Image (cartoon, rainbow, N blue to C red; front, side, top):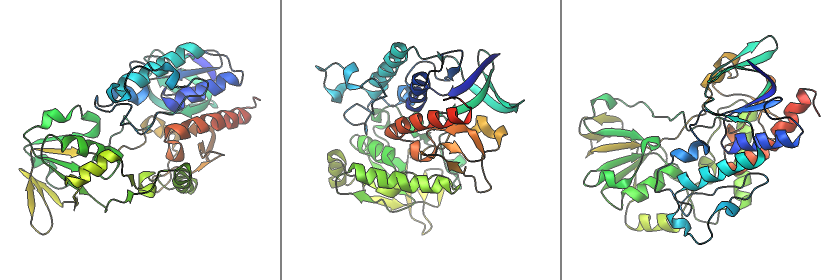
Length: 358
């Protein structure tokens, strides 16, 4: 049993940022704080991304505090040929080593409970007792697939974004892509280059024709933050900003790949059907329907309200209002890589103040 002041759960962007600021605040690695990571290696969710997601196509990798991402890249290599699933984990590994962060692997957390005024964190290689928690588990482990009538009857293949590898596996097959987020349109663009596709969404997509400026991003994050401060489930930033119409997506739109259909009413053995009786035959249904916050291990703490949301407070809206010694980074407005850094700094400051440590 390890006794610490702070247990950080997860070693992605948010977890490493929090660990850095805990160290900067004077906490001693392994004695005062520890980072528990369920992934097999450094890199967070980035190590599981599809190979075609390169540094050129990814929406941006924000620097961790104290070490620039660009400094870890080979300047002679074209970003278009560097998979994000390789480059980012290498960056995180160098970061952990350089700052000697106390990351424990395997450290997958199964459950967190109250025990005698502390939190008992049950994890691989032994439990941890902590006075405070900074949870940074993100969403990758909790893919969301909606339930539609007839899904079990479909004779083709169904998969989620998390299971996607390469567009070539769909050659010669008709693919229905479901979802209106960034991942949905990125994969739709790739797949439509090698085979036929049908795109369906619940709402009409909103395209951001103008430049995505920092002001646009901040305004979107502010709206998500307002929701979690009210205890509502967080909405996505894309639902506020719209989809960025990149040159690649402009090309996809010109060739008809972004012609959108409303959501179907049911899945049938050979495809999908709408309320008016029209159908589309399909070999594959790709559910690019997003993820939900991976917080099941915190269920015994009863953080959620009646509506399913968690009421958040604090400067960056990472502090659980009902439990000031619990911070959630990656929930709501801190779900982006740049938001995780800011949230890591403020979460550490607020948590240490709550624990009586300067």
